[in-house]
Image 1 (cartoon, helix red, strand yellow):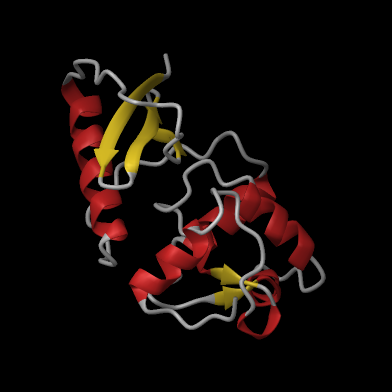
Image 2 (cartoon, rainbow, N blue to C red):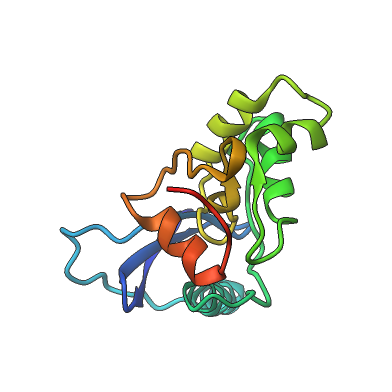
Length: 162
């Protein structure tokens, strides 16, 4: 059973969804959400919520999160899951281009597919798709609300061109 819970931050309430495997979705704060009841979690889901909350707050302060909760990426295709695993390897404050990621996956012509996989990332911020840029450090797209990609890259001290 999927359980969505609110994670209050200074940027609003993110909504994290957990299933029996781990964190399976993270949604950006919505302006319409004034409050989100945090249901009483027990056992491993309580620990996962705590790990997710800590990781999210650390990232929003420009720090490397540790530890991450278990991540359930089963909703993606094999290619998407491979991209998402590569994103987890990009260090804080560093970026890669869509083309470079495609090369690392031995699919040098799949830069658009890498971009689509980044856009389909079910756990943005924690799986750092914001660290992937278009060619020559240009910002490119982002699935979050306007300004999130730039904000996250700025707090990490990454180099990019808007």
